[in-house]
Amino acid sequence: MRSTAVIALYGKGVSKGIAIGKALLLGSEFNESNFSHITESEISSECIRLENSLKAVSKELRALKDALPPDSPKEIGPLLEVHSLLASDTSVCSETKEIIKSNLYNAQWALVSYGKKIEKQFEAIEDTYLKERLSDIQQVIERVVSHLSGNSARYLPKISNKSDSFILVATDISPADLLDLGDQKFGAFISDLGGPTSHSSIVARSMRLPAVVGMKNVRELVNPMDLLIVDGDQGLVIVNPSHKILSQYKKKQSEQKLAQNKLMASVPKVPLTKDGVAVNLEANIKHPSEVEFASKSGARGVGLFRTEFLFMNSDELPTEDEQFEAYKHVLETMNPLPVTIRTLDIGNDKLFKNATNTEVNPALGLRAIRYCLLNSEIFITQLNALVRASRYGRLRILLPMISHVDQVVQVKALLEKCQDSIQFDNRSNSTKIELGAMVEIPAMAIAIAPFLKELDFVSIGTNDLIQYALAVDRINDSVASLFEPSHPAVIKLIKMIIDASDKFKKPVHMCGEMAGDSIFTSLLLGLGLRNFSMHPNNFIEVIQRVKSTDISKVKQYIEPFLEKDAYIDLEKLNAL
Image (cartoon, rainbow, N blue to C red; front, side, top):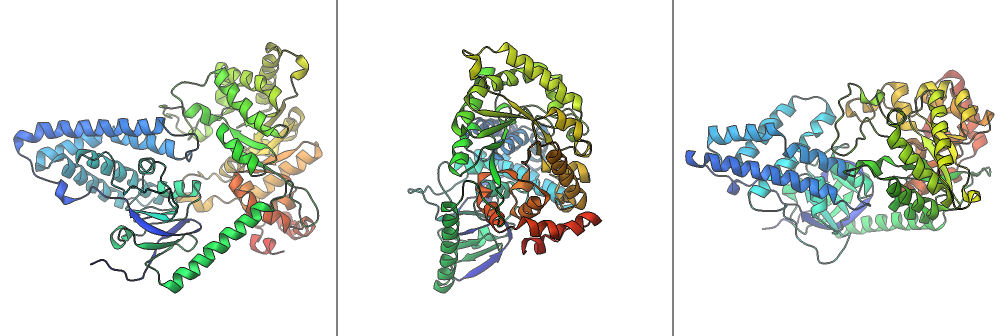
């Protein structure tokens, strides 16, 4: 008999918000009914069946990646690529074949046994981030087992009406699972496995859906169509809540939505601080299709268009015409507001499709402007497309990974040649192109004066600036606690950049994650920053903080900390 008892389950809240809905269970193929012994005469055919399924799943995952719509969460493509490579890994096939031969297991049983063997090896790993990568292997194995069992994808009941009142419940959720769901909509994700850096967590945050992961046995405790409350703020899932609890959470959910809608309706075009200082908010985008949402959200321009995503998701490099159309669309949509387009920032963790990184230390290697200047044909094609598109709006070109003034000088010479080679119907239609650079290498921040003489503006890239200043890999969970935006050295570098830019009367922007985190808004305003660029979803919280900030009080509060190179108490600062 189905249990309808009220159950409170705790896990890790990895994406904030409240969702209320019926449970939909993502099925599992790890069922003993699929496992059987075979005879010695069946070994060869079972090994062939395994090979064929591994190949089919690898091909299927790659096809899913290639068919991704432009508005898919940016994380899904690279994750599908990883899963496709795992399915084609020769060691998976060869070791599973050995289990088939030695134990006389069918392919499903042998593959699950291989997975358990790998799981035991991962138990000895202390690194949290690496431990969570076990889920990649488990997800691929489950998909292959599903294929071997005659199913094209893991079972999920089809929803007739498109609704966000359903909660997806699973042992784990892979990128391919999300695509299998098609256009079905969900209010939240909850899962047995996972942590803050697991893929279900990353995707949930990018989709702005509440999520609680690492719940151990929620898949077993929850029945299909159980009523669930998911509290992403508290890391809590309530199964079959009482009428009183349900009413409380409905009220809380309604209040949150009402507050958000009210804020959206009252978002000013140019927010002002308490003491009347105007603050400029621009949008970060990675694809031309995102510009409409940025415009509707009230962005005063595009502060960062990451063009590398035009290159990474294609089998071939985009042509000049293809790039031109992409840049033109963004410029026309935002005109007369400015659009900052960053030149190709390839390398490190961002690679061309099917490419592998063989550098010993890719974060410090051939990437971004270094790659572009060495591969001038690719770079000139992009510059030509940018120059052609510049007549359709106000274009700002942003150069990544600048460390030497000579790099800026070389780009200016190339850009001038491109401008001279392109003949507009009417020369007066060509507009001035502003040239800027990311300040993300400490060397540039420390000795910035010569750069400012050559540039029209600068933009602080806090993600890499913090990484390089503190010698902390920002995507390594084992040292995540050392990645501190509030570190006195980081704050000092930001202050140096802003002060120098003001001295040279050059605009200074910030486009890293720090710009979109409202915890730092008041501090950055006190340091002198007036131009912020972020994902439009962050506008409301940042605007709230802007409107509650008195810059004169902030400056007075932070001055003693700056003089002593000490940590600033952000909690007290934000309470001023």
